[in-house]
Every structure is written in C-alpha cells, then in structure tokens.
Image 1 (spheres, rainbow, N blue to C red):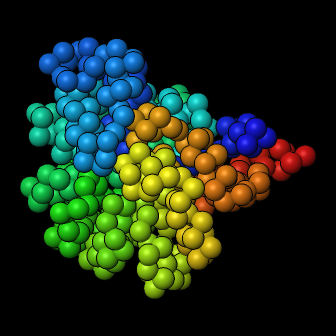
Image 2 (cartoon, rainbow, N blue to C red; image 1 turned 180 degrees about the vertical axis):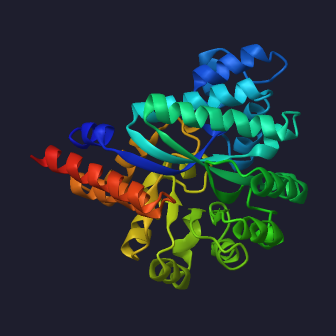
Length: 340
C-alpha cells in the first residue's frame, strides 16, 4: 500500500455517498459544541474520539443525532458546509453529491429558506474558492417517520435549490420499511430528482428490492446484503445500477464483522458497478483516500485498477455529460503521468 497511497492522495475523485453533518471534522464539532454548551457532545479531542466509538448501528444513530443538534442556525449550516468542502479539496475530490437532511435543521427552528440559502452560498463559494463542485441529495431521516418525509419532499420540490440533484432515504433500516415512502419518492422523481435511497446495509436483500421496485432507486446506498441474493446481483449488474459502498462505515456500524469479510469482492465479481465512498468520514476515523486504500487491498488493485474505481464514481454520478468527460480525462491523464 505504500506505493498506492500517494497515488490515491493525488487522484482526482468524485464521491457519491457522504453525509453533510456526518462529515463534520472534530475541529468543527468541537467548535459547535463550545458554542452550544447544553449539548452532550464533548469539546475535548480525546473525549470526542471516545464519543465517536460506536457500539452498534443504533448507537451510531444516537451519536449522529446529537451532532445534528449542534446545527442550530443558518451560520452553523454555512460554516459546516464550506468546511466539508475544504476537507474534500485536500483529498483532491473534485465533485461530491453531499447527502443533506433539511428536516433535521428545520425541525430545530432553522427556516427552510434560510437553510437552503446557507448551503447554496457555501456551495458557490466552495466551487469558486476551492475548486470543489458540490451537489445535494436531500434525504428523509427514516427514524423520523412520514412527517419528515412530507417535509423533505416539500422543501425539495417547492424550493428546489440549484445544486439539488437527488432524493434519498437514510437512518435505520430495521423497522423502517421502504415501501411507505413511495408517494414522496414519486413526487420527487416527478420534480426531476434522481432516487438514491439507502438499502440493504443492516437488513437483507429484500430491502434493496423494495428500494428498486417501490422507490425506483437509480443507485443504492450501501447495498451490503446484495450478495446474499444472486438474482439481485444479476439484476444490479444487468441494469448497471450502482452500489455506493462504504467499507469502514460498514465495519463501524457492525454491518460487517471485519473488513476482510466485506462483500465488495463478490459485488465486483458479479459485474456490479461499485463506487467507493466514506459515508460519515470523521465519525468513522476515515476519509475517501483511506476508503480507496481499503478497497485496493480488498480487491488486490494496482494504480490502474484504483483509477477504474474512480471512473466508476464519475459514471454513476449525476454530473452532466461534459462534466463526466472532463473528470474522466483528468483521471486518465493523472494515471498516465503516474505510470510514466
């Protein structure tokens, strides 16, 4: 890996499955916690590291929501968004579809228009100043039920900020069946948004089928259990429906027992379009470069193979044709230069 790590660090990349609040760096989390001292989130770096050590997926959701509670006004939203882009720029991430959960902020009193204006202002500044193109996936927090689904669909479809490209569903899967969200996805799709729900991370392949059939998913967030159903794998491969794979996240939330047993090898062997992502990177002690290094080890890839993974993300993205062509060309040029 010593040879590949510098290659990965300089590789131009796109990321498709990364959460807005979940990308808050420890520095930003500590700063927000200091501004909001009634929060249970610690400000000490060592205590913060312990706080982010998850027992299981349910505990992760508990911790995640406590960090969400730190985002209390539009300035918090803008600061977080811009700083996430700054961290992406350091990793040579050129384009990212950031999963944003408006309901988590609007239910805490941030007006929906102010929220949208804050992320849009940060998006425009990030592109102009950092060279990072951000697009939004507005997602339903599944644990908050149909009220949150109605609010998310309303904000997405009525306000529809310029950077919004897709509509998603996150949070716990157990006890949160996908079919109940069909009317909201139907509305978002009718408004021109792409469907990208989480499915099959902590539940079986039926959840993925539900996402495909009822929510008309164009990509699947995680999809870890897809390998348990050969028919599903074949369907994903044949239809070229991408999986947004997040190895370290799956380990942290106990969706997989260890990295060596991660099903990514079976996914690739079946011909599924696999993309590599970091999910909630600071919370899981990772970043996109680290996830590429993990994937390279699990798949036994050289630099050309890693570059192919990067191009998978470009293909699976919702960039326009010109944007895809430009980033693919940049990846190819970088790889050719590296290989000499």
